[in-house]
Each structure stands twice: as C-alpha cells, then as structure tokens.
Amino acid sequence: MQKSITSKLAQILNSIEPMLIELEQEATSAKPELEQIIANKCFTPNQDERIKVWFVKFLTLRESLWQVIDEAHEFAGIRIREIKTDNEYRLFVLGFVAACLVVKLDRLLLEKVAAHTFIQRKLNEGIPERNVQRKQYTAIYEAFTDVKNAYKIYQAIKFVDNQQIKLNTFKNDRDIGNFVRQLNEYRSYLDENKRNYLKRFIQFVKHIFKRRGASVKQQAQFKLLEVSGRILSECVNKENKLVTNEILEQVQQIVKPGDIFVTRHQYALTNLFLPGFWPHSAIYIGTEAEREEIGINIPKPLLVKWQGDICTFEALKDGVLLRTLENTLSVDGFVILRPTISQKGINKAIERILDHEGKKYNFDFDFFRSDRLVCTELSYRAFDEIEHIKIQLKERAGRPTLSAEDLCDLAIETKMFNAIAIFGVNNMTRIITDQQDVKKLLIASYK
Image (spheres, rainbow, N blue to C red):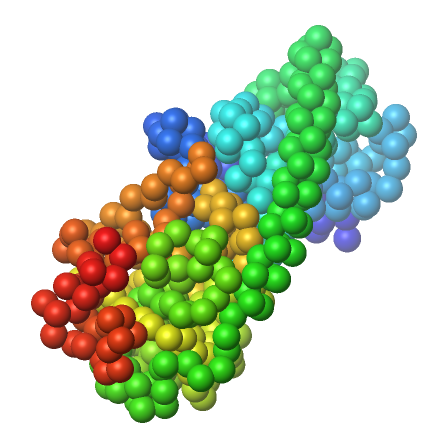
C-alpha cells in the first residue's frame, strides 16, 4: 500500500513543478505592472483580477505541496531518526522535496511579488468570490519565519547530509530517482543561513505590529463610518416617490442590459454628505428573458437568484445584491447612461461584475479593496478597460474615487457612454429621451 502512495505522491510532485515554473514566469512578466500599481497606489479592475487569479494559483499549488508533506508524514508515521525501510526513505525524499518547493514558492511571493506593503495589503484582503480567507499573506509570512518549521527543515537537512550514501542508492528508483538526482538543487531553495532567518523573523515581527496598528485604526474608522452611514441612509423620504409605476413601465421599454442608472432622492440626508446632485448609481443587468437572449454565462448559484423580477445589480447598505427595478428606481430622479461598446463587451462587463454578488457594502468608500464595494464601484469594475472604455479615478480626501457624477461626466465629455434618458429634473414629470435634450438637462442639473 505504501508503495502505491509513493507513486501517487511522486506523480503529484511531477505535475506541480511545471505549474510552479509557469507561476514564476507570470510573476517575472508582471514585475513592470506591479511597479506601476505601486507608483499609482491603485489597482485597476483588470489588475485586481489578475493578481487575484495569480494568488489563487499560488495558494492552490501551495496547498497541494502541503498535502504531499502531510501524506508522506502520515504514511511514514515515524520520526526522521527512525527511518529504516526503503519505503520510509522514499516517503522522506518526497516530503523533503515538497518542503523545498514550498519554501521556493513562499520566497517567490515574499521576496519578489509582495515585497511592497501595498501588494501585501491587497493579498491580505481575501477573495470572497473564490473562498479565499483574509490575511493569507500574513499567514504565509508567519509560517515562513516559524521557529518550529525552521527546526524541522534543519533536521531534514542534517538527515540528507548524514544519509547521502543510502539516498544515492535510489538514483534509479522508478518513483523518486529523478528527485534524488536533483536533491542538491532542491536544497538550494532553502536558506540555511541563520542570520538571514533572524533578519526575516525581525521583519515579520515589524510587519505584524504595523498591520495590527493599521488594522485597529482601520476597523475603528470603518465601524464609525458604517454606523453613521447606516443612520444616514435611513434618513430619507421613502414615500410618494416621483418615479411611479407608469414611469417604471416606460423605463422597461427603454433600458437594455448594461445600462447604468444614476439616481437621486429629493429628500435624503445623505445628499448633504455625498458629492453633487446625483449621488448614487446601479447597473441594469436585464430580465431572465434578456439574459437568455444575449447569452450571459454565470455560475449556477446565481441563476437561482436571478429570477422573476430581478433585473438590476446595486450596492446599498445591505450589501452588493441582485434587485428589482422597482427597488432600484424607488427614487425621485434618474439618468440612464449606456456604454458605447459591443454586445460582447456588455456581456463581459455583466459577467465580470456579478462575481462580486453577495459582498458587503464599503462604508469607507475605499476603491483600493475589492472585498467590499461602494455603488459606483460596480460600474467601474464592470466596464473599465473593456474595449475603448477607460475610467480614470479622481483623488478625493487623499484616495482614488469615482462619484456618480463622474460617470455622468463620461457621458457628457467622452464617447464612452451616452446619456439616453433623464427624469426628475427641472420639475419634469415625464422621461426625456431626445439625446440632445437629455444632455442639456443633465449638464444643467449639476454643472
């Protein structure tokens, strides 16, 4: 039975190594982009997506290597000093090689990809849509500098040195021969210098104290903003909205999947704290019939939610959720912006943004993080860098942001979006759809 285990673990290691090389190549080619991100202090949606895809690959490979280590240890069932049989030697070699590859992988992350605190912060964010928990970077850093792990590696190195003659007898072994012949190369992935280890440990301690301080401060600020944001969001007149059922029916005849609603409540306390006349936005993703007609591909769990009257996607205090048109347009005024891209681009934008369904609302309005989102961030993460659309964030209060009126500016000043309808300005009680009139009314509403 143990022999079949060694064959299985050897096959896993052989399959992992090419993927590790590919991961290294991707990290090397991404270096200029990482430098650009650090310089800009911001991730574009595509950059955010790419680094998360890379990190998920990294975590998957790392988990596979740890499975090899755990299985080799489990089936050997003895301490290094007690290794005697050939199968025990085989399992040791496989576990040792896997440990060397884990160290190589971790050094790639810690020393090359995430050497800057800006990248570290992003990797610590968590990826809810892919079931990746928060603080993964810190957990890897901690394991890399853990004294117990270092001692186990030290023992393994001593065993390799002391058992060199015996290990050489496995150079032509069907399962581990290739690994034995390259033991010196695998060993080179380890850093046996005690001074370097101490230096890394001190750096980790500094990282922990720095992150804890930042985290406590951030959590306190966020909690305050969340409480105040929830209170303010309740201070709105929800009765007798100007958008009536008749207006909703007219909207349904106009709107298409991918359109952006920029909206306003006439009497809402949040209007005093959010910039401009138009403070909020949402995306029309379409009805079930429209979804099927244009061929949007989404995960099955979302199909269950995207049924009946569901046709919009919006970030509110209760989270980033699929909603009804009646819910989204329970307002006093709105503008409909239509992206000037192909149907293929529209589909891609909707498919991309729906990955964020179920996330929490970001009361801190921090566009850096993507585990929580603010309303306008949905449009940014949906459309930026699709075909000719390039949405530039504007710095407010020392951080990059995007207001609802920034979206309107794109329709007024660029060819990325068209303003195709407006309602609720200048005492208008009907929807205006003539594009020249829409543009004039939109400009007059907030310029």
